[in-house]
Length: 259
Image (tube, rainbow, N blue to C red; front, side, top):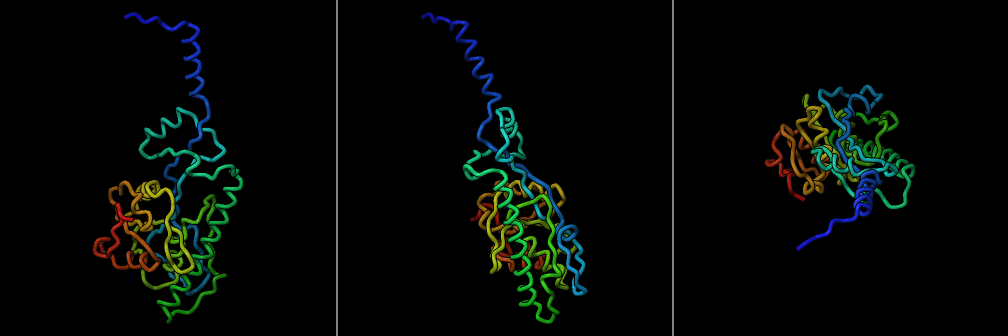
């Protein structure tokens, strides 16, 4: 059986079509690990003689996401898929439809400020409840200053940082600890996005203990070498995980592949 070849004009059209497709913007975003900031060193400031100096580091983690207004092209998407530290998602799964980058950034900053206010309130309540012998500290003496980062996912870490600096017990014991999760007024820790990317960011700065919201456990695909992962439901769980100096299995806080 014979097959006739395509006319040259048709071949040229097909070649041109796929060539242009490589440079056409596509509705995807790339998510990758961001930076890590020690909140005890650069973020939390307590102007009180009743504050204690910590011995370790407590890291706030960030995830880098392509801006909703940025154009993504085929080559970038293929590179993102090939790069083990990056993931590619449809833009609609990450950003709301028909909302500008300016509005999203504004909402993220509001979420960050709100999470800081909640963190201070929860931490002070925790200290009052568990250390009634300690003098009270006015919230106005506690400052949290985070630059170029938005969203509510630092709530648990902010809370832990304030507790660490207001109580005599050394929770960190010289370790590098990181974590993520929202905080509500009752001290419950809520889920966040980008858990795998945050684990990678934590490993890059030498973190050995990572506190993750239990609701995110089913989304963890792998735990970096050298990192012990704890599943956290409340701020009490977070303090227990650090102060007990025990394994997540013994504490009932094993996270991997659990909801």
